[in-house]
Length: 247
Image 1 (cartoon, rainbow, N blue to C red):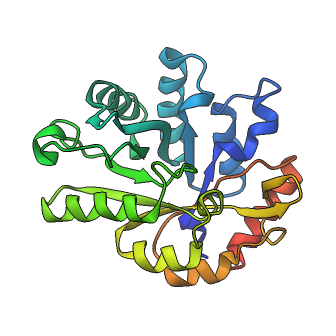
Image 2: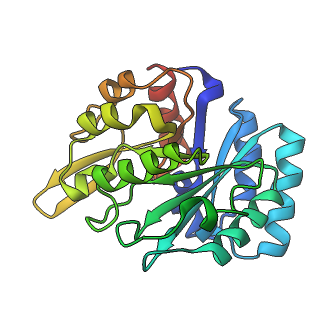
């Protein structure tokens, strides 16, 4: 894989975050590895007024592209979560963000006018994308495709982040869903998942049940791919990056 397509989601550094490590510290580390993409997680931000400004400075200093992962819903109780979404977009603008990722939420209960209700949200240069989560209520392929096809009919510019692992939690097939969703996909979240006696567990690549390389083969070769799973330490992170680069 082209190094320019590899994105590091800061969930990779979860173990360090829990010990006080800040997302801003990851920029220099990625620069040392000659990587040029970071995906900031909103839930890891402790001080928005200072950290967003720091992300902006560091992204310019190291020429690192920034993506923004926001674990919030586009639809809540069948309505567009407009007020909050606009707030997340303003946050993303503050650190030169390329793309904002949201969970789809309760689209099944939506009966409004998409074009009208999304007005203002799409008036930005930031790419807006939704992702499949781990809930049967919102994360099914059927629900995702219905929304994306409705957007396409209305010429609404919202794309899709394909999470390779989340399908396991709702008992859907990641390979088949990749075929159905590839034309909508702008970004991929990569992880492996293992079925154990205690349930499903996110694991390192090649240690689970997902044939991740075969899934990636389904997609165009110019889509950014985020590593999105906790790694124990820096040495493990380097090994995981190596696996992806060797793909």
